[in-house]
Image (cartoon, rainbow, N blue to C red; front, side):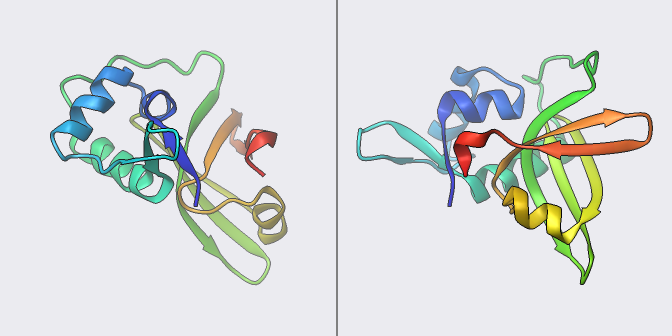
Amino acid sequence: MREYSMARAARLLGVSADTVRRWADAGRLPTRRDDGGRRVVDGRDLAAFAVELARHGDEERPAYTSARNAFAGIVTGVTLGDVAAQVEIQAGPHRLVSLMTREAVEELGLEVGVEATARVKATSVHVDRPVEQR
């Protein structure tokens, strides 16, 4: 499973790395030490935390803008059908749902805990993810 550095988790949650560290220190977000001694967050734990944070809000959350119509976030749900699929992404306080082919989900390697970006144009949402994750 994909793991995220504290800084990367902070970017995906839309907060500072210090805020993520405080949440981890308080036991709100589970972390572990990698082989280099750095704290990391499991992708599934981060996805669950992102959903919970969006549901209940947090007073430390900054204001957001969608000026560029690109929402970097983490996959929080994937529902696969025979041909079609539904992918949910939590991007800070924004929950985005995209319908796409099952083939696209498989080609992108989308699963809960994977970082992805939803790009919105009119009523269509396109999802991509960084190449280095594959």
